Length: 188
Length: 65
Image (cartoon, rainbow over all chains, first blue to last red; front, side):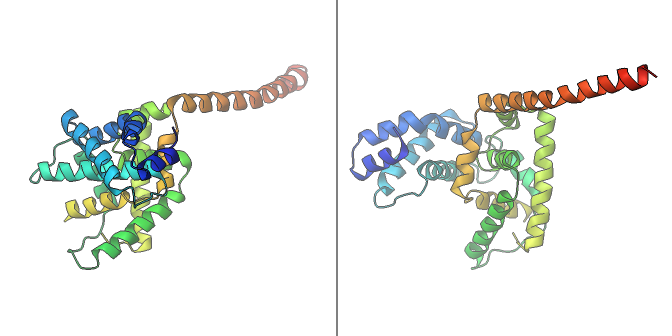
């Protein structure tokens, strides 16, 4: 069943739509959640929360790209759960390593301001432009690592690359992002 | 502060365009291997005439002289 049909079922309030969602997306969403939480039970709960949120938000909301909406939803739910669980120290999955890696891209810091949301949208725009300027493989590697939280080993398997190749590619991409953000005057 | 800034960057990455998310999920290992194989065949096919010309040049002009 394609995504448009599932969305149509959701708009018709057909309960089978959740079953179809499970069939098509449960494994993928579980994997994304596991990348961040590294806990089977938590990941399952996050996936269920995501399905519930989909049921509650569609309708009236109609996502432009349904699968991307699901990926973003489960990522946010998983990260919120992780933050709630580990307010003091980070623990699950690869997230602490991912954040350490991203430190290289951050050169300036600011206090929280009322303009934070606006600045965040500028940052997202700059990242989108940066991603659009990359080659397809580079862009996919970056997104898999820093959006989906995939491990280096997962990325190696996906592209049939060696571990050192993926690590050096990610290192170069972070450097390029740092330079790009500086050039665009994006302050974080 | 670096931590907070990293989290902001990480959060901003969470809002990137949908097409990049779909693209990253679209490729499978099988496709990757097929792409690699295609490239090898392509470059292999290009190498054959180059090797033939090199051999011909070597045998006619270098070895023959």
